View 1 (cartoon, helix red, strand yellow):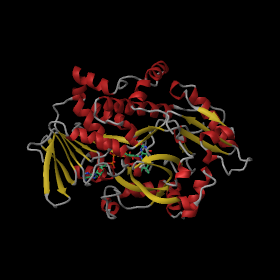
View 2 (cartoon, helix red, strand yellow):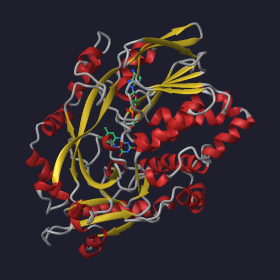
View 3 (cartoon, helix red, strand yellow):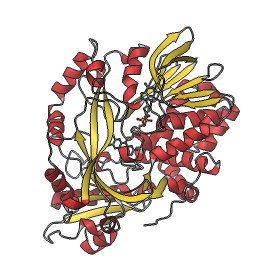
Length: 498
Ligand SMILES: Cc1cc2nc3c(=O)[nH]c(=O)nc-3n(C[C@H](O)[C@H](O)[C@H](O)COP(=O)(O)OP(=O)(O)OC[C@H]3O[C@@H](n4cnc5c(N)ncnc54)[C@H](O)[C@@H]3O)c2cc1C
């Protein structure tokens, strides 16, 4: 424990706390910061490489960011894809800054250039993909996007999608070479490693925060040390609850108005994994298909090359499955029942009643056999052999359900803050880790406005996130930015390198 209480406490040692902690320390080097992580290692929950898809979500391949027009022939709405692209750019800006300043060195160990593809089968889907490509390629952010409905071209892009498929079936794909595969766990550990080595900063692992309460003008927390069972306490003027699946219970403990009626519902993920080198060598890309019709905004299945534990592997999924745990590693099966209180039972029941189609989809997903998972894989890779694939657990996303939403499910990420800005927390999962720099920025703007109004704080933030005060939705600003951003690729060493 620090000899005196820090200015700031970050609860959770994942990608979100890592970004917020480093950005705050760089804006004001005098700040003292403590990180409390329940597990014995940092970033082994949702941010761990195996527990998410590692896609740098930039709107390049995810079809749910460009829904088809509701009226046939109406223009495509690409607003969401543009917004995600601009938010991901802020992560790339911050990461290149972190490389340049020795905060997260050796980028090849946590980020790689991997083409992002969208895949369509059938006449209607191919027409949709062609129209989507036409709408996106007109914008400077998506100028490098290619479209093909030619089998030979697609076979060159990735043979697994084509071989073994009948010639009668229309297929098409788009490809952007500038996509990325990010190991968010590795990156978090580097950022937190740097933070913990700074003056006035400490990172505690094996410290589970069990209580959070407001006392005078500070937040007091109680923590339990995993190894010894010993109790610890600390206090800070500002607390960030970046505890992933542990966030809702801590918000309930803090008794904030925003936590009233708040419920959490866990959805676990699973991947099919292939490590057979002869198959892995034939696929280099992240290929996203359309989301299944009933799946709400959970996103579509994808076939991805990943670099994990020093090895190149293929992942396919995610498949949703049931759990009552809120955390993959340190959660308990009692997490869901213990989170139900008189003020949120109505929220849970209303959400189930209003989302019958999604509930049915989740039940179907969870009851799937290995054979039906392989059938889903063969939609992408017709020649997939059962012997090459095994099922592994991915992370758990705890869907935040709010009373005010009248049962409507919200799948984005949302920053919630105490009315006086002394506490911030993150709810939701998607687009998640990819936009962590933008999320940290939002927290800093809402909770530390004075620090970035000061000339030196403003200049330091601008150095980390050059576009933090630029509206990239304006075409001229977007075109100018697209021309100038190549330096980021050089710093992150993003060379197309199959
Ligand atoms: C299947 C799946 C696929 C995904 N794919 C992608 C993707 O391709 N791209 C992308 O950008 N995002 C993706 N995401 C989302 C992304 O993984 C998350 O948004 C991100 O990792 C969340 O980071 P975090 O720091 O908020 O949470 P976490 O990484 O979960 O960190 C929270 C930390 O808090 C700790 N903690 C919890 N409770 C306590 C407590 N009481 N005291 C102390 N510590 C505590 C936990 O042990 C954990 O280490 C995916 C998610 C899932 C589930």
